[in-house]
Image 1 (cartoon, rainbow, N blue to C red):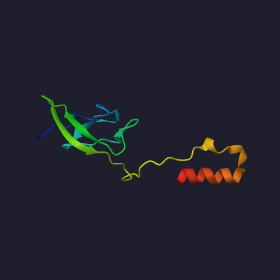
Image 2 (cartoon, rainbow, N blue to C red):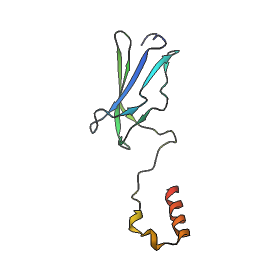
Image 3 (tube, rainbow, N blue to C red):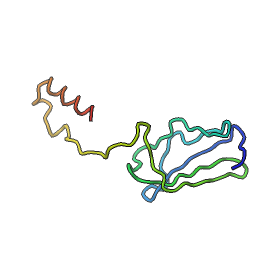
Image 4 (cartoon, rainbow, N blue to C red):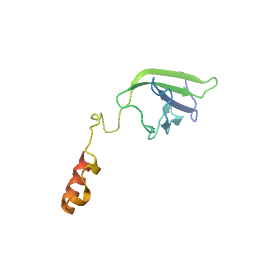
Length: 113
């Protein structure tokens, strides 16, 4: 890539074998000082925790420039996440059978997990 003028639009797309085109939010940015900064770029809906994907970057110059990066992985802002655990469903325990203070304790434990 050579010098790209400020204001040139850049988009990113992601996909894998299970989802050829994942829905992304905030996937378009403008070039400023040779950098496209994507503010709050995120996957919408289920994106496949732990799955790799192909990232496609399109720079809308004339002609457009397209780059792909294979086997990319998704990283959260707060770092890697633990695998999902199956939690006890609230409807397995009748809320009316618990005292109010016990219910608050249960809700606090769920909030922390």
